[in-house]
Length: 83
Ligand SMILES: [Zn+2]
Image 1 (cartoon, rainbow, N blue to C red):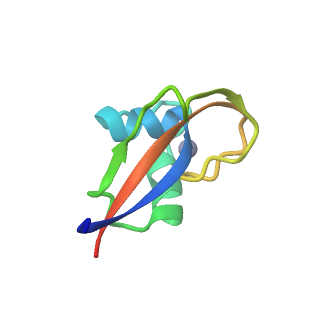
Image 2 (cartoon, rainbow, N blue to C red; image 1 turned 120 degrees about the vertical axis):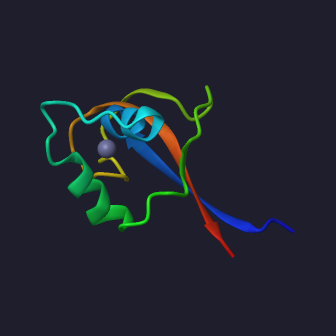
């Protein structure tokens, strides 16, 4: 049995870069606040889960990590929630 529940999110490129290397783009100064509004304060269990199957070159669904409605690239983030 797995010790984690895995929650998969479709996320925008801003969120992916933030979770990959902590970057906050200059044009999204509120990014961290937006992400915490959606995912809560504890972001330590979020990982980038890149794969060709879940990579979307141009998606119009809102980002499930920060709520951005800007259409564009989507990749998967995984939240590992300890059971
Ligand atoms: Zn996002």
